Length: 409
Image (cartoon, rainbow, N blue to C red; front, side, top):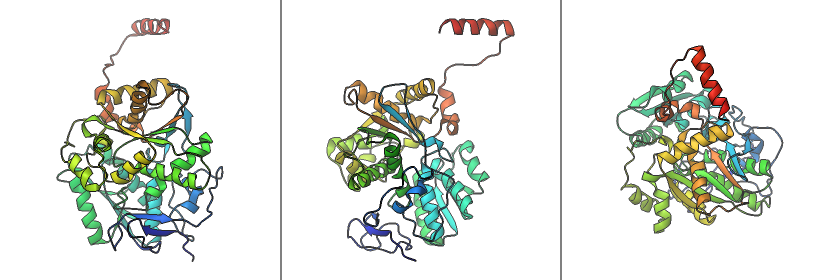
């Protein structure tokens, strides 16, 4: 079997065999990336899932991918503004962008002979891990904070995962997973490059699909900012497209983050670039804040160095947003476009509206919003903020209400 994909360390340049399990470089601790055969091209319009781009994904020949049909999500033009497009990642099998990453990660885990996967997540990554591990016939355990809402963990249990509430914060759970995976020799599905270099390769396929659907590179891409990995992955996808001569420019990338956890905004102002500098900025922030954007409540973005470089190289920016802006954007997407996303996803529209209002996004420029997750999975977060209270009416009252409603256009 010829392994044509080659992992390598970005820092020291050392190469490794594709079936060697890697997190960081075992020589210098640098981040792991992948080289693909020179002259590799993309197969547009052939199939739907991300695996039609297999030649640019890190799964060697001879191994079947673990797939639930992820990818191929729609790109629709919004009714909110002209030249505004919505990339609907909530249409993935478990309702989020994480399915692309998990399909690649679990495929590699199975190829390398792992029998179990472990993650710390009470959200999208945990659910995707449980689903793809079930599809692969692998055991799966998910660590969640002790106060995790049961509505979030119930689907993981249905997929057959062992869910373990852990005392402490989500960061405590992530630290435990990192230590335990090494000790018990199980595959860590954390979607951060420092812990898992394979999975972010799945995320870059969003760039390929945007080109396929829009037939050009947009001027702007707005991405909700959690760890920074989604933004970094899509940017890398466009870099590959540029090197292949398939696009003539790289879009400007905008990280849409919470006002109280505006690490990227501060990093861009102060010139911070390193992990240490980002940790210093994050150390002054409180991740325990109450917020609708629970998926964005990360003071320290684990993939921040890579994502910040992508923002700077593309001449993009970061914008910090309030919960009120998230809620208004969420309502606007639902009422104008018939799309119901989680509040964290609505940050992409809120960020666009902010930059459009100050003239940074100019008329005629094309912008794509990455809508990362479904609102149907975050009802417990959204419903308390909806002010209307339902009550029962008799048929005469209902008729009057309808007449008034219809008369008002």
